[in-house]
Image (tube, rainbow, N blue to C red; front, side):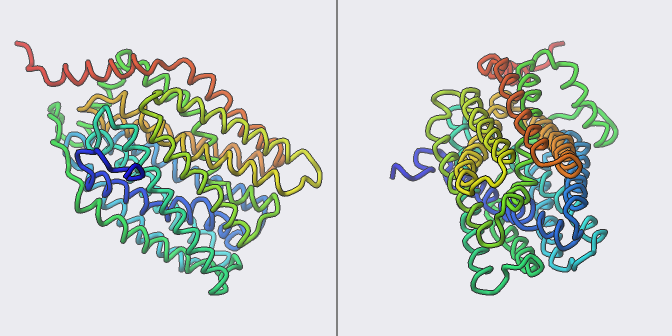
Length: 437
């Protein structure tokens, strides 16, 4: 029973359904963004190493730029119209269909690949924002860290299953060669569609907020966003956190977009690549489960700092290995565990901080801002990393990666978690008071 992550929760079925969406969309973040499609795009669609690195980075960053523009607008509209669940479900459906269509992309079809990938990644990333915005409503201030980490852990359970299936497909069905990976893309879309069904059925839309008299939805959204900017001093700890998050988020986004490409540059191919990512995913799952046990006890900020320290050591290890001619393979397996622990812990802790700092009536808007910052980190981080890697070299790009995490750690020291929590609670109480005459 001690291993039951839902024990003691008031709404275990709802939390499970919410977490299953994390399990569902792992097929996109893992098989498409991290493991398979990035390499397929570089080697089969583009067919040139330097050009492939550069074009993949720009394509990924371009799709993220669209998310940056849309996130705050859609988050505010969802809050005032009560459309968060609709947006979550329909972005998921659209992403599933587009992901399955990746199976139609042949060699050298660069334009087709970009036209299909950009909207698919856009819908996936927007859906991630709305999934996160349900966190305060499926948890309590006492359990928010535990629920966030539970969802993260369920995502890694999905990743493990996906990696096992992918490895079996490569070995038993003869799909190991990169040019034969298109069936995996179709499978990724089907997996996402089937496993998002519980969330579509179980999640309940919170009551929509009062409008501010704007004549259009876009106008209403901009009014709400303007109020958030004007009252920024009230949420200064959130602003400090998002600044730090932007810096270390650039590093996390680089790993998501380039993990498989970096591994291949260190000599990992086909099945060994899957095994490597499997090891990384196991350690990430352990980190997510462990975070659920201690995050609410020590606080989200110390948790973030612990994982940023691990991230920095892992990035330093990659940099050192890239500078050693003929470096043996075993250190890369060791560093992979550090990357796994960093991925497994940093996301859930960061999501918890936003949940703690968000007033109850602005959760969709604040998680939209969080998503906007994270996606902007992808635009800047992935595009800069890809261009440095393509035109200067691997060591320089890994030095840049180390800088993202180190500077993020320093900026995170300025965040006061308790002050941010108190500011959010004051704003929530003020929103429930009747207007004065």
